[in-house]
Length: 241
Image 1 (cartoon, rainbow, N blue to C red):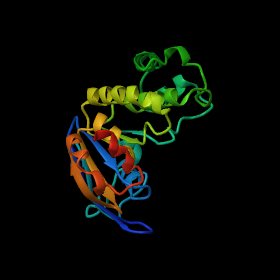
Image 2 (image 1 turned 120 degrees about the horizontal axis):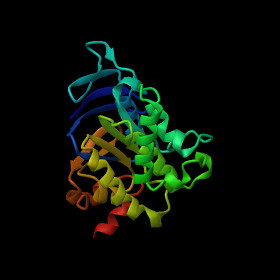
Image 3 (image 1 turned 90 degrees about the horizontal axis):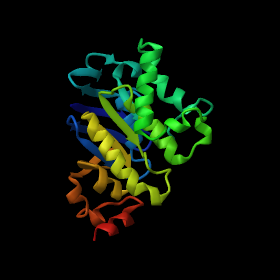
Image 4 (image 1 turned 30 degrees about the vertical axis):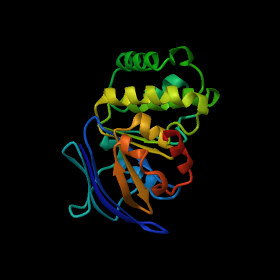
């Protein structure tokens, strides 16, 4: 289980979030641009530090201001899919996926077997030698997800994982994403601006407004948010009515 209770002063507001995510649960985090969604992911991943509070994952304390503990990102064992995917552009698909394994003391043969399994599962083995800069948006998304999953993370964080994809491909990718994440049985948080993602992928959703949780509920409740959802893509709710 992931447990968060943090505060951080930002330029326009104070981020103040308290929530928990169970093992195997997918929490969708929605809200307007600049409301603190990505900052919250970065606090959990250790890329930014809260001003105060506590973050615990599976019984391990990742951050605790009272104890003056702040675990470095490399030790948190978190799989993070960034909005831009953050692939190494001039490295091959194979080397991008293998990257996180090479600091874990695995033999070359062990890495080869794992990477082949994950690339086969993602339908990427045939393009394993291609440079990341030369592949499509959908392929980049699958490479980034494979790289996050192959380390067998204790937590998954995904920041707008479908936003760069063609709308026609998003429906199939939503199903694929949900299946792959649920198979891991770890807590997961997905940031999105699209309520279709919430309905099709998530087990639970939180609306973040100016750094604070304003609404929370299951996918079946999302369609009832309606006019309460102030962010720019509120029009997406029309598909549920």
